[in-house]
Image (cartoon, rainbow, N blue to C red; front, side, top):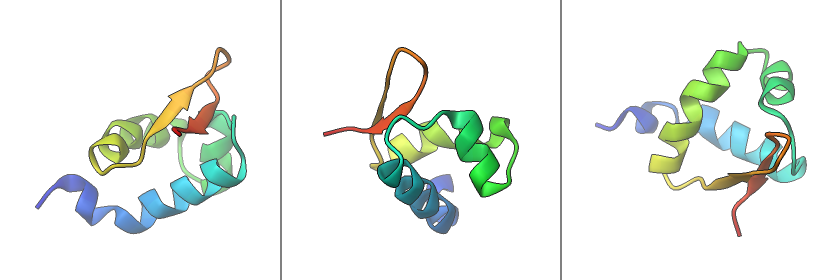
Length: 66
């Protein structure tokens, strides 16, 4: 079983927040989820593997990939 399958609920919540707040910085996302920023940075590559795709702007803000 892939690691990301164990985290589907957490990934879905992160995706919901990013889609509702395009351009959100990882630090703000971490604050909203009450997790360390390092947790967000660690989850993002696994989320890509799971099919959640984002692009990053010049400030580091996350946007849903269209």
